[in-house]
Image (cartoon, rainbow, N blue to C red; front, top):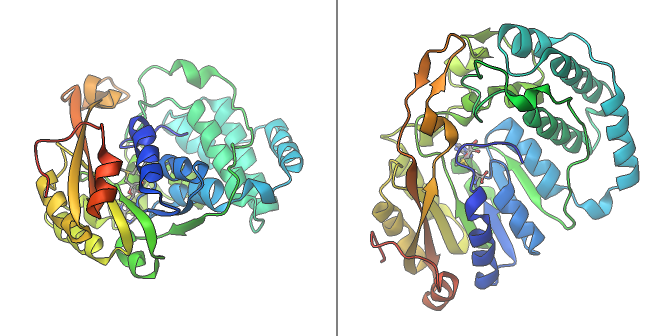
Length: 354
Ligand SMILES: C[S@@+](CC[C@H](N)C(=O)[O-])C[C@H]1O[C@@H](n2cnc3c(N)ncnc32)[C@H](O)[C@@H]1O
């Protein structure tokens, strides 16, 4: 999976277990990001609908959640990837922008990304495998990038992994049906299906995901945007592109309350953090409409950029090092007996239980 700030990698086993204990057969992952939570739930047999406003996240959801491996000729798919992997590199937007101007990829890899992305556009633009091929390209590019995991800067010295050749291989597709929705959760919620379990993991601060992962946005959009700054971000990010109400401190709490209110679910799980703008006690209050609320608390190591600071090309620090650890919360709400079964044995927060 791609490196992703705010990804629930460490909590995936817990979230998987919560689904199983809730005996949920249908689930909603409203801010799906990498789709790793949705994937875990699909693996456990649930029908999952994965929602996200970022273009690359929608591609990942189309690939891992909406595509049923049982419907795919995996041999033929392997051949397509082998063909893409053999394509000779060529100069293009990625080479010029993300290797020569900025330094996210070594030149030979950037040229191959250009060649593969052009081939997908030329030959697969309206094929059902488009998201699978694009996801394969995103994952391959992520394995050879030269960042700390966000694309607001790149490393002063090339990362060791950037010297590896780009390797295109089929993503590990999961069997079974699922759905993907590309859009703003606050707008899409009215049209989403009623589910057994809904999970909300919105952004916690002002940084837009479309900006943090602008290289992935551009790889998916393939629109050769004008760019700005040392990081070569998409020009639209100076305006409203990728803006989310959850990146606006004053508006985020009301947006969250209204979203929680609109959910059609028996059980809700909401992610929070001791660094988030919405206090976990407030999240617990919002969730109380589902019934009983328990708050689980997990200590977690913060992402590496937050610990060492982030430096620009000239070696100047552009991000301050912060605390090494934080606490992540899971607010679990629903009928009393279901919540008590789900939460048994997990560490409870002293912050709030309604
Ligand atoms: C904390 S991350 C989710 C991480 C995810 N649970 C994972 O494990 O990979 C928040 C996600 O919310 C998405 N997002 C931000 N605002 C949104 C909105 N209004 N509607 C839908 N998705 C949004 C971002 O693109 C980002 O992927």
